[in-house]
Amino acid sequence: MFDRRTLLLSSLALSVTGPVLAQGRKPVPVIFHTDIGGDVDDTFALLYLLRRPELDLKLVATDAGSPDYKARLTGKLLTLAKRTDVAIAMGRPKGEETGAQSDWLGDYRLDDYPGVVRRDAAQAMIDTVMTSPEPVTILSVGPATELAEALKREPQLAKKARFIGMFGSVRIGYKGVAPADAEYNVKIDPAALRTIFEADWISCAITPLDTCGLVTLDGPDWRKLWDSRDPFAVACIENSKVWLPNAPWMAKDFDLSKQSSVQFDAVAVEMAFDESRLVMETLPLSVTDEGMTLIDPVKGRPVRVATQWKDLAGFKRELVEALTRAA
Image 1 (cartoon, rainbow, N blue to C red):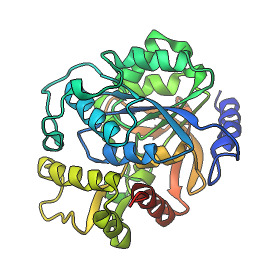
Image 2: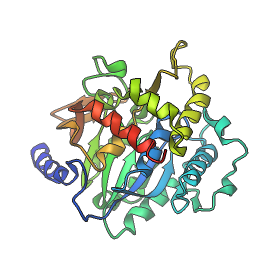
Image 3: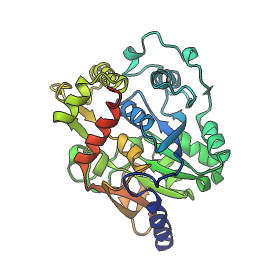
């Protein structure tokens, strides 16, 4: 099982390796599946996605509770980007309807969004994939409860989609040090990631903490974004400022004027069109009830994993260039 799928996934990966997609190729249809509004990195990732001509965003599906708040935040960002053609789909309620970036929303209401808003994220993902004339890439950067529900309702979804996720920790944990950790997105719903790994995707890949946990913008890169008047850059900085006091896991002496928070999710966006800056390995992964993603040759499922950087500095520059392009 592992050897056969390894060959299949490795061959399919060739289609996304390289600095850009093949000349003349149409943009890749994308679903952004996110827990936006908890950590500010989802905001950076969504805006980065919207600046990539290689990607064609069709749907933003929220997860992990607070559906109204997350949909409002998504709606305001899409409105800022003049992309109200993108549908928003809300996950199921869980806990309070608030979040760390609420102050940035001001009096923006969900009714202010002129685009389509749906109340069932799982069904919206099913409909988007199953009605697409070409394969859809699902970028999943939060706990995957709604995507797992979509796969349970419609198992054929995976055969028409590529999965790229920000999940796990294989050899390196938080703060860029070994050993591996129980990464947040997995720990919240380990069963959901098991469902995803077991699905028959066109291809399945993740960026774990080994790579995405190393992306902090600082020095000239951060200063360029901090000083930019590009509306995307301004939104990133404004949201970072209102988010930071509501992020108790951040160090008390963290200086936002000198560096960003960790930009976990933007790496998954990058992988949707370019893997050339990353070392990719196909590894047999299993998921424990405690939220660990283990290399398990016996029970593991083959997953393409971004385990190291070839050019982290180049990716940081590219991310900042995209977010400051209109300045």
